[in-house]
Amino acid sequence: MTEQQTGGPQSFKPEISRRDVLHGGAGSVLTGVLAKAGISPRSAEAGPEPEKSAVLDWKEIGPPTPEKYNPHNEKYNVSGGIRALYADPEHPDFTMAASQNWTGGPTAEFKITADGGRTGWADEKPFKNERGVGRDYLGLPDGSVLLVADYAVARRGPSGGWDEYSLPKGISVAQTARLSKDGRLLVAGKGGIGWASLEKLNELKDPNNWKMSQNIPQWSMIRTMVTDKDGTIYTSGWGGSTSPYYKQMEEGPGIWWSKDNGESFQPAGEIAEAVRDSRGRVNGNTIELGDYRGSKLMFIGCEGGGSGRDGDRPYDPNFRSFFICVDGKVYDSEKTDVKGLCSALGQDLITPQRGIVVSYITRKVYVSSWSQHIAACDLDAILSGEKLNWQRVTKPGPQDATFGAGLMVLSTDKSGIDKLFTGGERYVHKDPANKPYVPVRAAELK
Image (cartoon, rainbow, N blue to C red; front, side, top):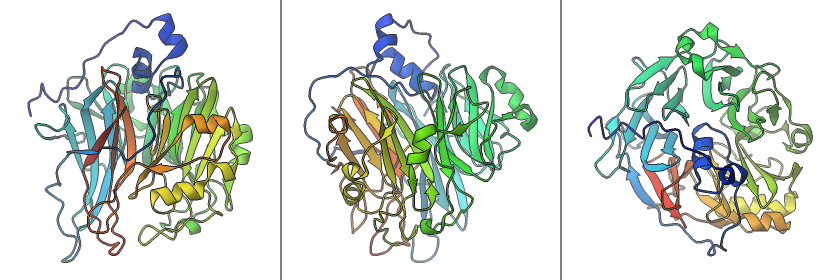
């Protein structure tokens, strides 16, 4: 693959019409611009009635089985799965993936394609030295892409080439990044949230040039951030425990928000009080926003309460793993039907980072559970206040394996078709220690 092929979309400054600003319909210029900046478009016009939900036609696009993906022992292949995934919001063929593989210990690999994998994937070298596993990608307004790894961040320019930057001094392990409405870059993880002006990115090779957001509990592991159109930043994450057995996890930080572009955070009002489980405040992994037919929607995915990473994860009503808020009010728990959602997903929901996607083309919300399946329900059903009907949109894998879902990203091509990407790892019910590698898959949403 040539450098020109992997250069990615070029920087552009589109003219945005008043209609785009007011409506921001799916596939509009504004949608792409906001998505590149990590800001939720949160707006869509009602379109034609979509067809009933069905299993989607998923296509494997790669990358192929990593060269370093060797048997961890004589019996099993062990993969940490695809841990970060990027698809340009307006150019679905430009895709990047970061995987975690086991060769006696975790190693990170970074791959890129500019043509949807049709002529293969190229290796990327974001860091000169090992910086841990890739955790998140963030598209920037100039066409560049930021990669968040465990121990550093790096920026890929619009024409290729990487520059490496430090983490904020107060963060020991990074997890995610977003932009504020006024153009600040926020990086979050274990220890809180750090921020700096995007215009001063070159100064961030010194960890002291970051500033730390105030009030976020330093014991927390921030896993998700999202910026609303009005500038409010919502965030959540894990509590102090890193136990893989979720019933042993401590109370999480719950839902927080910032009204000053990330300088400080506070518990998110009534939502913070209502979004709780038997531990208290939830351990959140992903927050997704939407605006549908005049109502503001918020979807919150958590860790759930299954027995652990290995072995079946039964649904447990004491550890509620999914919440919906409509115009600031939490949707009735019985009508949300988390048990039905978990049944559609195959096991208890453990939402990965970027594990919830809203499509205004199909007028559905899609929810993923790590190593399991993806399910969807109608946005109109949420607004009607009825009990939700969750439908699985993936098929099981071979030999008693799951589909192997994980994080999800959405891109809209020039014809206005949404393409949903997912990357994760497979789970084999009868042989849970065997974790086969599974490539990125994509499906068109029409």
